[in-house]
Image (cartoon, rainbow, N blue to C red; front, top):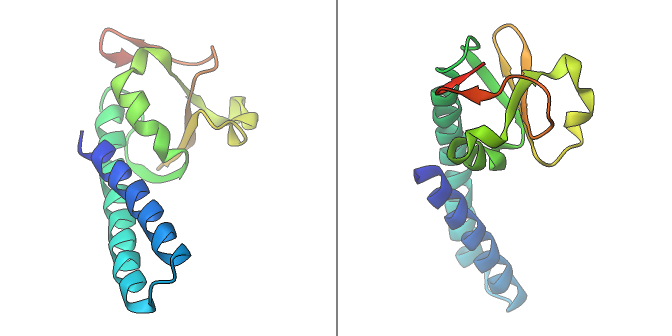
Length: 128
């Protein structure tokens, strides 16, 4: 999955930048890595939208507006959808504090993918 590779490369670049700055490398080398990190952040955001949009095709919730929190959980949701539940955030506000949640906005409402045992399950290739 492309998103997974991009996130792994992003984390590698962050670690590489930290090691270089610890060793005292100059601003020019660090600015080159910073520009690569910024570009990867933009690409990760775009690809996250694409992956979430693909997941939402199996629901009645479409017209994705924004990913609010937890885009790093998107890979796990895509690979193992039967472990996740889809619900409206109105029913479960404490999900803002949960690290294992993905909160996103559609044109009409804000929804969450969570591992709590509430909401729509993934059955027969659909969120029901």
